[in-house]
Amino acid sequence: MKDSPGTEARHKRVMERIVALTLQIGVITSVVLVLAGAAVTFWHHPEYVHGTELLKMLTGPDNDFPKTLHNVFAGLAAFRGQSIIVLGLMVLLATPVLRVAISALIFLLERDGVFVAITLFVLGLLVVSFFLGRVE
Amino acid sequence: MTPLWFMLALFGISILAGFLGSLLGIGGGIILTPALTLLLGVDIRYAIGASLVSVIATSSGAAAAYVRERMANIRVAMLLEIGTTVGALIGASVGGYVGKNWLFVIFGLMLGYSSLVMLRKRRDLGGVDVPPDRLADRLRLHDAYFDEAAGREIPYKVTHTKVGVALMVVAGAASGLLGIGSGSLKVPAMDLAMRLPIKVSTATSNFMMGVTAAASAGIYFARGDINPFIAAPVAAGVLMGATLGSRILGKIQSHTVRLLFVLVLLLVSAQMLWKGLRP
Image 1 (tube, each protein chain N blue to C red):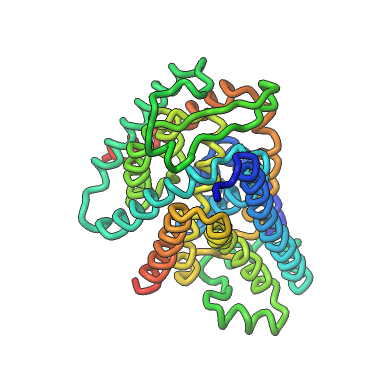
Image 2 (cartoon, rainbow over the protein chains, first blue to last red):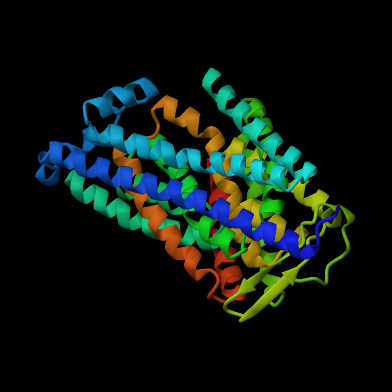
């Protein structure tokens, strides 16, 4: 049975709502984490508020911030501000990928085969390029 | 400068970058990279990492509103995303083999030319009066959005879909090769070839660029290019600016958006020519 145009339009609105909501949740979570992390950093290091000689260290290669997932979680366990920031950044970097994954799911529910294929293809390429980058 | 002042200054600059980026469908690197390297003395490596964060933050911060207000066309975005991701992979794999100088010159000239053509189109709002395209019909790409400035719903049709996808491959490859935000290439392609309304073009470009950038985010993170002390104010500021910008896009006149975009495009074009031609 073919859906009437009205049903299709309504489906589309629902889809747009879900995508928008996902994005908003991701964005708000990441902002809260990033701001909390910055607050914790300054709380642990009151010298960052007045000292001028520390900026070069913080913005240069000597800043020992977490670069692997393992480091991030170790830092979180120790309640390190920069690790909380990185967690927030990771949530932010994941939102677009999540957006594609959800779109694929919604196209699937709408039984829009062509767009399921298109979206899964994009998702697959994202994963491939992610791992290609890791090998370098 | 104290670390606190650094963060606050960068936060302010990032709000501006996010605002402009969300209006024009570009990443904000055009403001952030020079501000970080020239003004704040940050190493280019961390500046590029921060720009990547800015692209994703601009995209995610504005996309929610653009999707809700139907300014971004998700179906067009997903389809074109095939082109940009394939292009990005091509660009990344041939990156070591091609001379970048003449590529900068070619793209610089191309963008300069596009900006002039886009300027000439400034009376055109996009719409349903475009050459028929069976592929766009079959994929049901046509849509409508509510334009607050015009005070009415604006239906539009998409045309030259194949050309659009092909141009996205070029755009993706160029951003992989030259490290430029692909928004400056995507918007002219959607505007001039596919004939989307300018606001739909920038909002759709905005929606897409986060996805493309996310593909390389893992690399930058593992390489240690994303310094949380620099990225935190960028992420928070850009998200705020982008949320603000996305609320405003509907309200400003289409030709204002177009004019702003043309100005930024001219700037990018000049920057690229300079990069390619400097001794």
